[in-house]
Amino acid sequence: MFFTDVNAFDALTNTTLVEDFEGFAPKDRALPSFVSNGNTYTGLASVPHPNVWVSRPGYINFGVPVTTSSILNCSWR
View 1 (cartoon, one colour):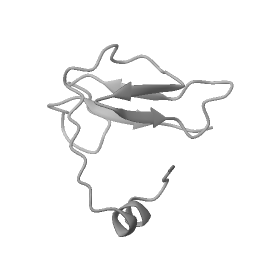
View 2 (cartoon, one colour; view 1 turned 45 degrees about the horizontal axis):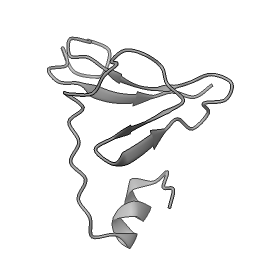
View 3 (cartoon, one colour; view 1 turned 60 degrees about the vertical axis):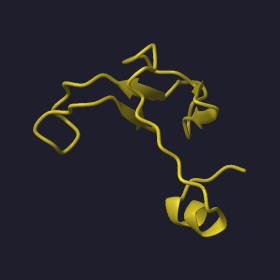
View 4 (spheres, helix red, strand yellow; view 1 turned 180 degrees about the horizontal axis):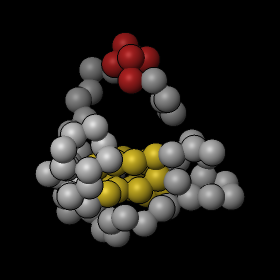
């Protein structure tokens, strides 16, 4: 199943996903999709531009003073 809404996911499942992305590689590289811990992460508009990636700690543009862990990102055009 493919979900784009966390509330729809929560309503249909009783699974808790915990993913920290700390061990994921490569970081800071846009990908069309990737698998981590058995979960597939796919960008919403990855063709023709890959757009899902994991950012390393240290960014200041995510609404907090500085990120202290790796963060999953997806952008669309």
